[in-house]
Amino acid sequence: MAKVLVVTSGKGGVGKTTSTAAIGAALAQAGKKTVVIDFDIGLRNLDLVMGAERRVVFDLINVVQGVAKLPQALIRDKRLEKLWLLPASQTRDKEALTEEGVGRVIADLRTSFDWIVCDSPAGIERGAMLAMRFADAAIIVTNPEVSSVRDSDRIIGMLDAKTVKAEAGERVEKHVLITRYDVSRAARGEMISIDDILEILATPLLGIIPESQDVLRASNVGSPVTLNNPASAPARAYHDAMRRLLGETVPMQVPSERKGLMDLLRGRRAA
Amino acid sequence: MSILRFFSSRAARPAVATAPIARDRLQILLAHERAGMRGQPDLLMQLREEILAVVSRHVALDPEKVMVRMERGKNVSTLEVDIELPNESGVSLAATG
Image 1 (cartoon, one colour):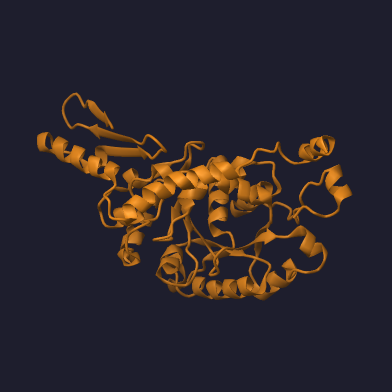
Image 2 (image 1 turned 180 degrees about the vertical axis):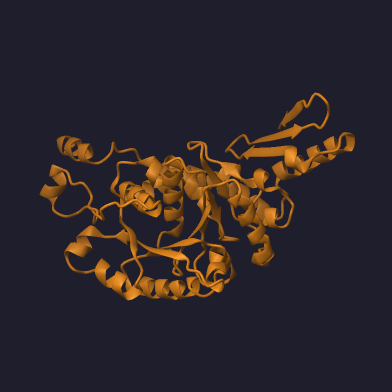
């Protein structure tokens, strides 16, 4: 049965798009037929992070407005057979995205995909509302930092009130994903602890993704980090998160960068 | 220093600079996007429209059976229009420009 997953946060720059690409690719690698949808109308970026930016012909709004059929707008990943992208429109008006139209697209996708991963824009406006509207499950991307935790709390409230599931008296399955976790700052006690975040948000933890140069490298070359460097610390953390999403029990590890001898000699310079 | 680099790069990945790749990708993408923003019609999209208009003058097109693929490049872009013609043989007509 198809599952609609929204990757959301409220706050911008916390890693929603990176996480959407990484989890989407990890699901596809695990054999799940997956589509990632960019809901950031006017400021699309998922295409760039996925490395499909030169191949965009049609977008979500074209499909909603009936200019293009869904199969025409879906871009198949060149590396992973089970991974597809539905890009956002870069030029058109946000108002063109209607709830009814998005509902139709999602219902259509449910018939042919295992996972539908919706990359929410920042904020709590229309785009963010529509990205979560039809969700069965949600990943709340949170940085260990006060404003991000506050915004996550706000978003959790919206997931519990403004989704189709919530309105029907059901619950959206919620998961907190901690990203940009800085190992050295944590060691110095300069970051809000994960336990504190989870207690404040009262939401279970899906994974802890370390701040890493590998994430930047992956987006530079346009490849989800789980695909670009599967052995890297963030890729392993995303992979574990994906398995938890599938219901597997995977021991939670606070990731650390693998340090070489020279790194140790030089002191804690690696982030 | 080179010995130090040798050891430290064994711990990390082979050092391939990704920044130039990022710059090239952005340059190509933005060149196409800026043209579009300035109101210059995207040539590829225009070609697509016209190719489909010509074909549909001769045969009834099933929009579901038209696949358009594009690849925007630095010097060369490609447009691939794959039209499944609704006749007995079901031949596929491909135009590349």
